[in-house]
Length: 344
Image (cartoon, one colour):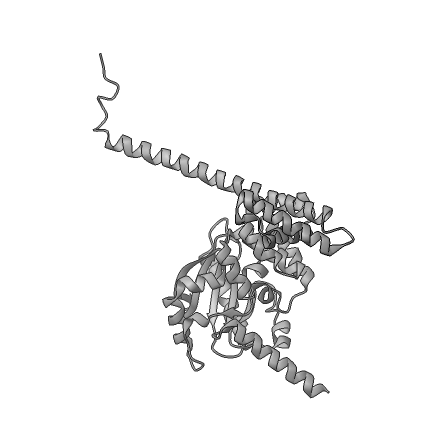
């Protein structure tokens, strides 16, 4: 009689393979269960919020309705715990008021957690809320990352100088599975984590970015992979050096980045065009889209940017700031107030 296992080496490799396969099945099932549980909880909270909003808070006497909600919260807390406090019930009502249709809520419930949605319903601007909905779902942001992007005003930076309708059209592409360069790139880039003083050089800036590459990639956004620093570009025997080169795995293209510790100048576009044409000819592989360029500078004039076409197309110019975003917004408000005062 032949033993079926006689030709197999002592059981360790088989056992390890079996263990790996089984753990993969368990983790996959756990992930599906977590998604299902989260979706069910979100739909439950939406259903509770809708019922309270329609049947109680819609009454002619709002004081009575609020009192009913208070008593409901007390009874639910006794039976189910603190997850149904008065404040949480009113957040469920707010959720149902913002997302009125089950058809809208159901896909969100499968993509975002209740913690994500609590942050979203706190946003008063509908377009801003939809912006973060789309990107959080596409890029699978954690609740902490969503909070970070809201705090760093990603929506306002993506909207800078753009028609809100055009941004909404790009968001529709995101929902459809595409990524437009206008959403992959932003303006300005907040590089306060680099710790640079106001008199830094381009070499200082580049060195600091390399040292803090993980945080720089977070600021760039999802999809960027670092490729090279000081990428040599040889044309007619002359060597030129591209500051930073990335590849965006969602857009499937190279992204060339030039660093300028000064105001944008017209010649910067020509330099970037040379780099992009070289990358397109010598580095682009089948399946890739044409490369795009990003010029990071300390300032740029709106008229020059528009005339050079650097607010759209394959080359974009964007400011970078080395101070926290709140300081930048405070500076803008002071400048705007000064302009209003001068006009009076």
